[in-house]
Image 1: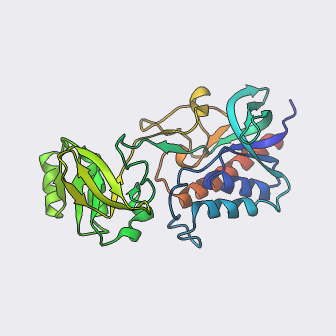
Image 2: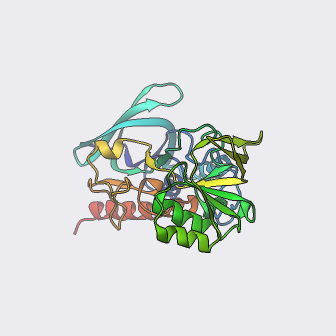
Length: 308
């Protein structure tokens, strides 16, 4: 089978764009399938990205697309890839255009999954509406913007304890909100108390925000309110795309797509990078992972082309 592309990249966030750029510089025939808005679409800025600190997510992606234009072997299409199957020594992917819903079929020697994850937020009023501004997932990404202000950390057990201790590096006024029994061990309570972190275990009714989607206060089921400038939580996640699962790829216990040191999944020829895979989730790290995956892909293809 003569494949149209060397690599099909599915997902055009930081990881996918970085991989496309590196593979373009390797003169590889690449199709970048852009399936829609990124996970951080609601955030006012991408932080900690060297030379681009605070840039709007949409602007970062626009620059990424712009910088792909000189590389004529890289093609970008608005596509939703729905299935991947092995065909000969490569793969055939099928799906549809996101703009016109036209069916598409793509053949490629290798596939890179950069499809990312989605966050599962509590089913309470205000969490989804304030996501990315008043409700935050990462103090490394957003802690500086709310430094020194009254903050809340939402969750239970070991997860909320660790996150609250971390967030307390940015503010002396942190309160853990467990939304019912916190399942905190005596040692966890002692550690929180030592850092002067309060605990509220009443059920939460809703979050109340401002017109600018900033958090104003947390309202509990009994009607009382706690004024806070922002709320942090480690939300559960799920893969945005079922492609890895449908291919029979291995997953970690946390639900991430397992990859080896060369960014290859347990399915030969299928690679993955960015938030799809295990590790700390930041735009800069996703871009670095996409770059590294591209190098591994190019070297793997070169070995196939130049056998011993």
